[in-house]
Image 1: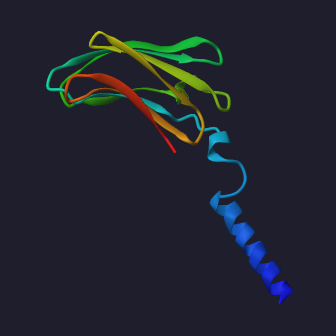
Image 2: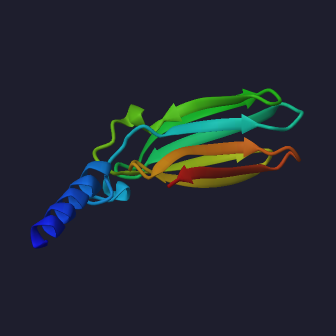
Length: 131
């Protein structure tokens, strides 16, 4: 009976390792592919100024202005372009409709993309995806 329990425990542990439920958490696993998106849900064109700073070096890796038509969205940058070394932090600074903001993302498997948007009521905002 004891051997049966030991085999079951070993099988269960192996399953946890294979599925990623044990080991290094996703927040500690590097992933460099994180896009920065602009989205305009308003019924008027919108201008965006986007600056992306790589915190590890203090370098501005992206500094560009964009105009999006109504209901347009566009990927404007990806942290992969900076070739981050492991897990790094990137600050995205934005200006739209005379308002400014920032959003921070890290190059780990838990973070997704960053989004700067004009909402349907014309208000600018930003967010990011995370697990």
